Length: 519
Image (tube, rainbow, N blue to C red; front, side, top):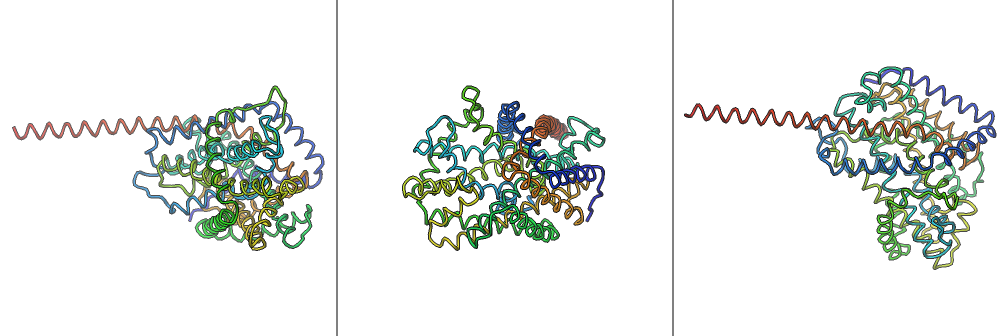
């Protein structure tokens, strides 16, 4: 199997990541201060930009799904999908937002219930409805539209046009052969750096919640030292998985993740307030769809409230930062699917699963908070990482379920990191589908080191800050990607129409010749 050679992109991105790690370990306070200043500037100056561009990604994805481009296959016309549908969904869902869903599934709706947006009074029925609606919003169509755009660009360039699995290859219709020069190398280097920090952000959250689960189970202290030790242990585990390749480690872990998550989800639905969960899901879907456009453009210039910057803009930046990683991974496992099937699978199915997840865990938590007198909000205020475990404590078989939830977080952690090392290896090995183990190991260690640095320089705040600051320039690349995809698909459809006209002319000519011969 061809493993590709490392080049400029590898050395540049490793150097930048290593310098950041060094800065964070030697001067964590200075790093925190610089990042906080950058965060404040970007949130205040470019918040509107994040909202508009993210909505643009959604509109573009929807147009692709229902346009004449939908029948174009991501591969040759006779290619079949490489993975069964269930395995495909499991892999993209695990890589896409597994840890985040488990971390925020209870914490975010309860947090919004206490401090809701839209000038709603906290701890009221309206606050509960608004809390679930914004949880759907932050984990619904927009995030998966971002992934759809990046993944589609990569899959089309690689499988349809035979180009490399590099971010720069998606811009070939715009840039031409310049993608092979310095400009292409710069784009790919930045995509790698964005991927490193996006994954490190998620691993930082995962380490904090594993720590929360172990504290709940066996009293492990919730300290930075504990979280660094967790990162070290899980790094060893995911490097072992990374050495087995895509069709073993990641594939099996993804199916295991979906199995664990489904078991936990069904248990909470069955033993929790079942009717409440189903009714909450139904009414919030309607509210979400009805308010999608107002929420997508909501800023607060007249009240100067910080909700949009602290939550919506953070999330949009986080998803953009994850786009090169998740996009590369989804593209890699999506060969043979049509654009319509691809967009439907990547955009709508995970969005619905996210809605069910938040309705179940967030809905159950809100029900216990509002109607059963269990003060889950106090746990969220004191320690956000404990929110899920506090909810599970209210249900039967709580100890078993807490153990299962902790295992789920660990397997999601391993899968995300494993997928990330594969993608980073691919992006820094000239787009090779089989990067060397040594390259994957280097990236695995660096990602874990950056997650550690982010925790050292500010915990959750440090993790969030890195996302918003680094996502801004990559969002520009994604806008260019939309223009490039659109241009390429237009040209392809024109070529298909020309071929069809030539085919029809040949048939007409043959019919005429047959008629002449008979006469």
